[in-house]
Amino acid sequence: MKQKFVEVTNNEQNWGKFLLLQFDSEWEYDSQMSPGRPLLQQIGFNPRQIWVLDLQTCEGAAVVPGGSASADLNKHKVWVCPMYEPFLEWLYRQEFDSIEELPGKLNLTDAEFQMGGYRRPGL
Image (cartoon, rainbow, N blue to C red; front, side, top):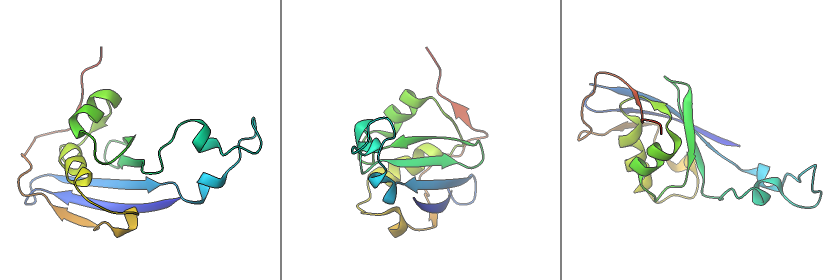
């Protein structure tokens, strides 16, 4: 599994600390319940899918860049720091093959300052 730490700020007002994870050789893992068939393919994982873990809240979600950050947060309802959604918005606009290509530090100057993290409301 590939991993990448990314720290994000908005002019040093908020500080997001994230761990990105991307499956690598795990795509070849055969299911023990259905030998000869790769497990991740069987359960519908997308090769572009990335786990974005908020290191401050210890929560995160598997997302596919190119979608809607707001919709993904509404879907997963994870507790996140103020920089999680701006970071996802930035991530979704990038073109890359591997998370290893992404920078380790970002300053998202247009991200709004917030006093604390949040979880999207449940049903």
